[in-house]
Amino acid sequence: MTPIIMASVAQNFTQSLLILVEGMGGIFLFMGLFYALILVLEKLFQGKKEA
Image 1 (tube, rainbow, N blue to C red):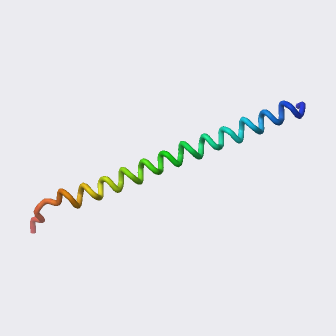
Image 2: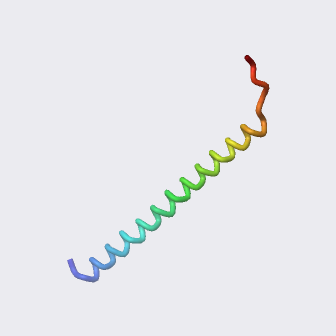
Image 3: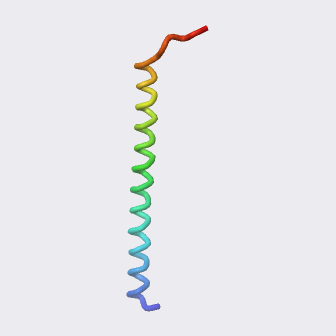
């Protein structure tokens, strides 16, 4: 392969890894916020505890 093609492949790979990290970070951020929301709602709307 020529160096020009190798450079573009490396650039594409780097860009794809950055997109992957952004996407996975967004998913984990959303899941953390969703979990926190569930915990807050459980605290707000606690029912009576039955023995």
